[in-house]
Length: 408
Image 1 (cartoon, rainbow, N blue to C red):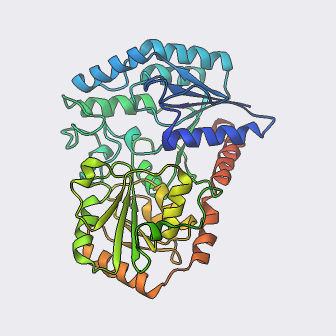
Image 2: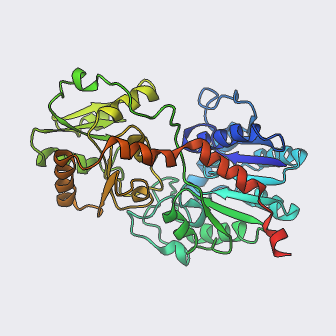
Image 3: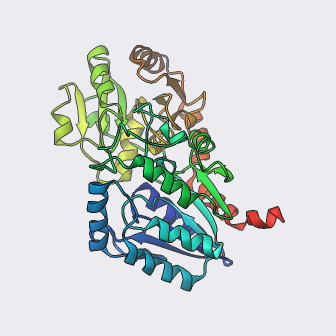
């Protein structure tokens, strides 16, 4: 069996998942697996060093594609030569399955790719990491309180948000994407959360079967470890409330932490990881800011030192940080949004309504002072997050009979 996977970048969370599946596939003598990633970032950002991974396309063409897309509102219709070169390589490989991941970074011509897939009747598995596949433009729409994607996007309230456009073409793009993405003879949609699966079933992708395969983490990296974080910051007698994000802002709940810093007494210490100089200007003096950690081991040390991980995210698919915290023995308190509440169970966390700051404050005090969650229960829950097992679920999905065979 031959699998060809496509993702816009080799790095980040989606690139990590693609590489993890590749590693699991290598253990199967019956599977040949090759992954393709787009030529968009610099060579430093996208090193072609991972065995089994190949760069496709032309950087200058992709940058031109991005610029024209922003000006015209027509996304992912250029990068023709790069896509033709990708199709040529796929055709030479002759895959039994094409596994798609993220396709929205101007590295691919979508109509060309899907014309090839439909013409050759290739089986497809498409892992959705956000909502972009079934909207006219945006990857997320919860904060915008928009449900136009169900019947046809138009008058987009987020036209200047990634992937931003000068002109609103969302009505046309929604129709084009529906045309491109529907009618594939054998395609399975995979989502990391039940929440996203529910949205897919309300979209124009509802003709396809949907399977939930949760994302996972490396439990060899994320587990309780000895930490001197408290001593370094003189927090021996404090309850540490931890927040970790990359791209702090309202979506990640930065304003919530600022509000909490004014509400909570001096028994509590908020620590935010993933900040920068600009974020620091917004933070009060009583919040500890950690711009970045040197490695994941150092991040695990901070998780292990915390009493409670607070995730007031307002828009999320299936946040890895929740899993990382629980795996390090620290319970999670989160807003009820996206797939975030699917990660902690009743013994490892608590969920409050979005923007209910009063209840969030109440639960912080209750959880920390009453110590209602244990490290042992967190570690039991963390077994469900083992990334290796998640990658094996993909291998199992590859080996299932094609939908067209089942229908015969």
